[in-house]
Image (cartoon, rainbow, N blue to C red; front, side):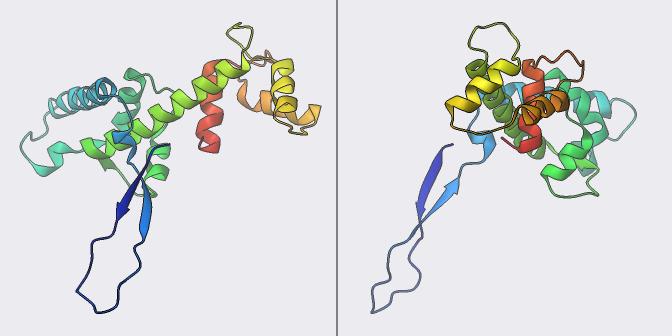
Length: 185
């Protein structure tokens, strides 16, 4: 993760020197994604807004710049962030009563989830050493022992069962994203 150091501006002049402190502030997720991804997210939001506003809603009101979060699922799917629900947006902004989002809010959420998707894909590639396109029990065992983690067989099987909705015992990249989303990787 990229961090920015910001020094605090001096307050009023004092006779005694104040110690210089720098705080580390994480950059917002929308600043950490590529410009092309940023534009893709904003264009998808704009298209959804045009579609939503084209259904008889006023186009020049303040509320016309807000998209109901119930409509956001289609937009997320369009930008390849599948498996996310409106409740995920509410929990991201820590607001159970959130009903609409603006472009900036959507960009922040989608950027964060894009970063999670990238990280989960990288983790998947590290585990899928043979490039089979799936991760199996033995891959998890190998990685855990390589990291010095003492995880029992039944715990690994439980992890696979949690993420594998098909019941095949195979983890695909989409399963890794579900795990990354769940553990906030």
